Length: 304
Ligand SMILES: Cc1cc2nc3c(=O)[nH]c(=O)nc-3n(C[C@H](O)[C@H](O)[C@H](O)COP(=O)(O)OP(=O)(O)OC[C@H]3O[C@@H](n4cnc5c(N)ncnc54)[C@H](O)[C@@H]3O)c2cc1C
Image 1: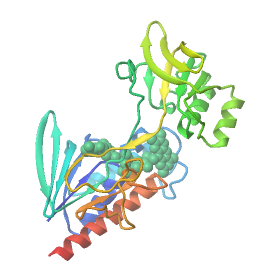
Image 2 (image 1 turned 120 degrees about the horizontal axis):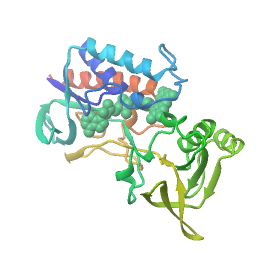
Image 3 (image 1 turned 90 degrees about the vertical axis):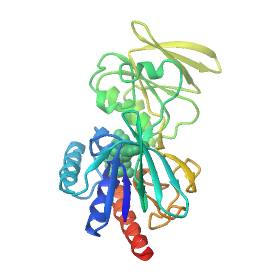
Image 4 (image 1 turned 30 degrees about the vertical axis):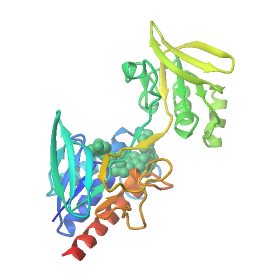
């Protein structure tokens, strides 16, 4: 009996490690050939991983790579599009280079994490990664002496604004409704001279010699010129389409699980950031992966 594991971040690697330990055959699918998931996209110090190598996300990624090379399961590169589950086996439908393939498994662990949300406004997709970015820490020293915008109201937005200001940029934060960032970030931003424009909604981007941001507020529409913009408006779970039975999700669309990572659909488990939780971290993703693997194994053995 084969169990599918979808993802390449800490939750997936941990799940595969444990499934192999239990002697379960694994079908591993990840969107990219690279292991690490969000850790690969982390540039700040990791302060809360209680085992070595903590702090440097690049070292954590390379440890995950070393670990994944030791696995006997080989990764299939492809994007999971659909999970079809009735009462029997689960069918995974995935695409690679425009070709759709299907794999039947006895069950599946979804460890697909989250993606940073975008504003979905005109000009954003075209200017993504040239003028519009999603990570301030990756560019923190690139805008010294220049003017940048940060869009968002949470921790990531205000932490990003602080990093950019510390790197010497003049920063404006556009906040649509209420600031939800921790007080320490808001205070630090104020100390660094970050300007906060409350009640503003970004409605588009346009590139001239600068980046023009269209902003709407109660005072009407205006254009603000900056050198770059950083969109930090939160994340959302990466979920496939479910046909047959659909697992329960929480208000924000994350997969609901019980204490053992069982979703509401038998044969589907979830681990890591994709599941409903109050904490999304490397430690919890590793633990979730192990627990999901143990649940999958228990379910497989009880079926035989
Ligand atoms: C900027 C930033 C800073 C962070 N700082 C910290 C920190 O200091 N400490 C800490 O503990 N945590 C931190 N985190 C959070 C941590 O990175 C995540 O909690 C952790 O990576 C979650 O692991 P995961 O395996 O659940 O998901 P991810 O790491 O997101 O991995 C998901 C994987 O699924 C794959 N995937 C997605 N969709 C599909 C699909 N349809 N088909 C196939 N594969 C798919 C992706 O390619 C990826 O490999 C940070 C995250 C960010 C973004």
